[in-house]
Amino acid sequence: MAEARLTQRQLAERIGSDPETVGRWISDEHRTPHAQTRWAVADVLGVDEVELWPRAARAALKTGPDREIISVYPSHSATPAAVWQRLITDAVREIMLCGTSPYWLWYEVPNLTQTLRGRVEAGARVRVVIGIADDPMITADEVATGSPMTLSARIAQTRHVLEPLRDMVQVRQSGMGYGRSVYRGDDQAVVHLWLHGQRGEDFPTMHLHKRQAGGIFDQMVRHTEALWADAAPVWP
Image (tube, rainbow, N blue to C red; front, top):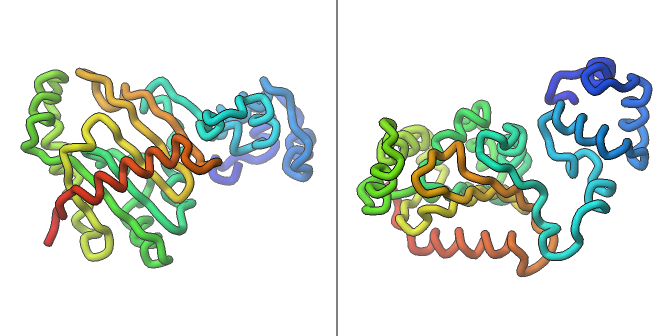
């Protein structure tokens, strides 16, 4: 509510509830509204239901390996900005941005350059893997999408926005990450599944949270670590 700059009364009005009821949700972590109300609150605040009422939400979800999947969004544009912001701002140990041209994160996360610098100064390790502008796969993607803002230009823009961080953020480039973007902050990750011939805002998105050893989250970590090991430094 604080991040959305909403008071109890304002939130209550948005969801058609009573301010005192909202107050009871805040003061008593065991008090949980009905599912439709939870969904409405999550939509208004721009966060996942699981973040607000984890026990109630997860009780209604699957309990197998897919419990690591917090949410699935049909497209990048449908993913709440708060998901990207918390992925970065909540991380204290490790941030890994593994995408061909993740320059768009600077639009999703306010003051991202300063935030990443602050994370490093606080002890976090920050690494970035981006694509190679003249890689044949990049050329093929540009032909398939026909976008006037070419993927190679977006890679160049990514290098540009990362330039002020070159003294503390490690950046490497690889052509092997094409089609499988993974953005990780500690034990959470957001995965983009590329669609051939489609723009980035149309890519389906999964929000993951590590809950077991050897699960889908660990698989994504293995993928990014293997890419990192084989990638070449962007700067000397």
